[in-house]
Image (cartoon, rainbow, N blue to C red; front, side, top):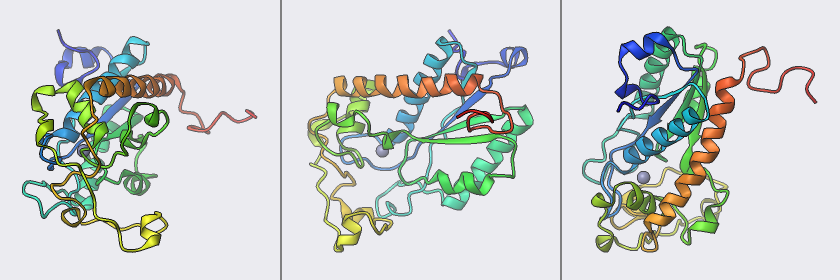
Length: 260
Ligand SMILES: [Zn+2]
């Protein structure tokens, strides 16, 4: 049975009958994830989370549609590893601009970019598009949502750690080989200002990690992955429902004029 919240499963017949109010555009990546998770980890996460949040929003009455996931992202700092399939930020910008133009021609006004990959930086990209399109763009870096994280997970997440491994154990256990994983140890930065995050740098991943993993995956479980997905789905579906019914008036996305 076709899922009515996934464009890839619909026909023109359904789209002709009714356009969605909100679309979700997921971005993944193709890159190594320690020795135990597949190259498509970020893409699988984008697929799973994109579909699940749109399904839940659909069940709550929202007119939402999830687009197919872009399976590549920016990998300039992982390129010492084989098959870290890079799109330069300027290329991602062109892809986003072209897809947003297609949405605009379709008559869509609200688009949520669902980003699964830390190497993609969409905030600057949507700033560049601001004023050039009538589509309102929103960005969700779902891995950056921290509220409630410490109640489920023990290790800090960075790349192929406890969080990502738990999600894959839940969604695609057939692709996880946890016994192969190293412990995700990382080399410390030389400068205090960098360690504290006062100064940022694009970290060369082959110097930071041993096998591309940053963060310990060994306490990951499918149950932790399911719990975290439940939290994400509830939060993000709530947003999609609110966005779906919100009129685009003069003060969108702020409260209407006259509201205290
Ligand atoms: Zn990842």
